[in-house]
Length: 291
Image (tube, rainbow, N blue to C red; front, top):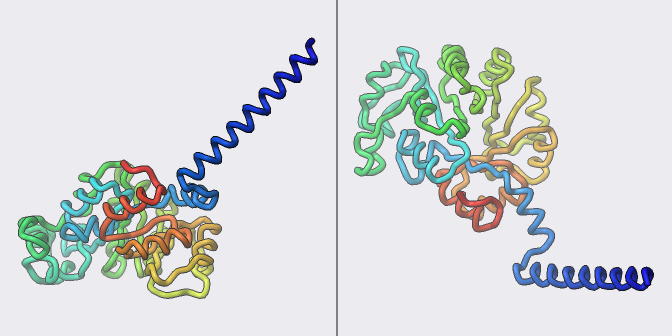
């Protein structure tokens, strides 16, 4: 009797397993999911959305309005640019001068912070942003959630005058933990890294290097991330960098076709003027969960 019951139970379990397998196959077919897509979903789930100068495609670049919009749209990180004013303040602006993005003129390094902050940095973009001003770096950190990372790009180091100002600023609170400092000036980055080993540095460049990861290794300091122009890096380059422990954050990709190519080659983050649109695109591709 016991043997008969055992055999009956075994047959029932086998039948149930086969039925579940059939249901799983049907569900997989109905959702049009294959193993490659599942792998793609898993591998791209951690891709960071990085707002270039905030959400520069929809708000005046490098303003609090732009950074707050990027945060509202679900960006994981914002990228911004800093210069040093004549009185030693860290000013958030892309250009060396106020000419293009404000109603004033002059080189930031020659102006006091009060003069810079008095300019209108929004009207050039749209009357809706009239009165928006250039922020100090500390204002950006205070305005954004502590969970949001900030990519500080150093544009004009003013020799080495900016080094100590920036490091002193980052040492306050836990700012250094949420910061990546990037620059096209790689000597500056090495200098900063040697002064502060905990600092995460990112190499900006616009060249299709023979060996992207190999170049970073030549600097003889730990490089956290590569920030190449988005058209000048491929799958092998990205794989080598990731294997070497570096993040890969190409700039500045604004079109779906560009985003998809970067996802296909395995980048870990994308810098874009349209963080909201990129977030929606990634969600639609089932790569990340929408907020």
